[in-house]
Image (tube, rainbow, N blue to C red):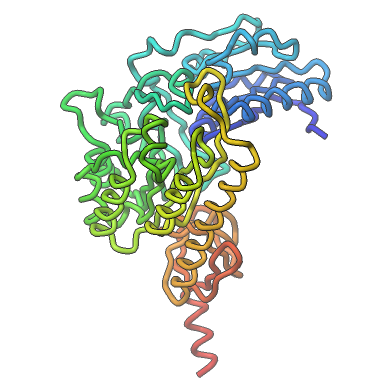
Length: 428
């Protein structure tokens, strides 16, 4: 049963960026707006849109009188359809949802959805702190200039726009001053950060500046990055900056060159291999995650095996794997489709390969020392993004040095160095 709504709430579908923007909405929404629900939608697949609509209908049915406001990528790409839903009080576009004034006056039901494709600058928004999260997310870029055939997100987010360097540095410092020990740089396509700024600085140069200028920053992490070209400043930062975490998540999508071309990706499999080889040369022991799509139109068994081989060859541990889902309005939806069950079966094979790699890596960590950012009293994330659990209770948001003493099903188990030394002393 859906929770009864008695105050303003935000329900989020989709990516980390939506989660970040929902935090902004929660901070800016007028507290007097009782019995209001903001639904921040996702458009990455037809299923994501379907789930959001089902949630809206069910929630409205179980909460008579509730004002439901719809925003996000699904609304931006098809606002007329969402505006016609009888359960929706108001629709708000992705440009407008980042403006404080939008959430201060929600009295009328006039829709606020402008053409996001005409936006040329990143909306200057900033989330001052994350009460429920130990890692702070900092948006450095919005939109995407690429046109992958499976994706309509650029039409929900607009073209790529970079947050200027000084704003990024200032906002990062505010997050550290708020009390966060780790910052995650995020956006739609953060690898393209800087291409619309003066002198076209690279993501790697921004990373170096953040690590140099932000006082008190202990850990810096990147969200998903594109392996299409090597950013030598980023590679140098991996080599020289310990505060840059030894974990990268790559937007690979497939291991077969023909499928990559049909996806209209900017890289081939050999480019991914070259990128990973350089990253591991500069940061031995770095752990990889990756996005993969299984069952893309025209994918045969040989093409699928190419993805499987790439996962195994590169020892990718943290897989973000989806069976292909046709998206209305995307070129790939018009291509010859693979049967749904086969897409899911192939996705399962890719996940099994990633899980095998992650278990092998976790086994290798037994006996090592991990620095764990505590996300709850007894669980957190180490430098390599693996979950580490412990029997001790620590303050959320602190970084604890733990001795890894065993591997669980999907996580590591650690004991504090102090307790570990005590155990050794007692045994002696």
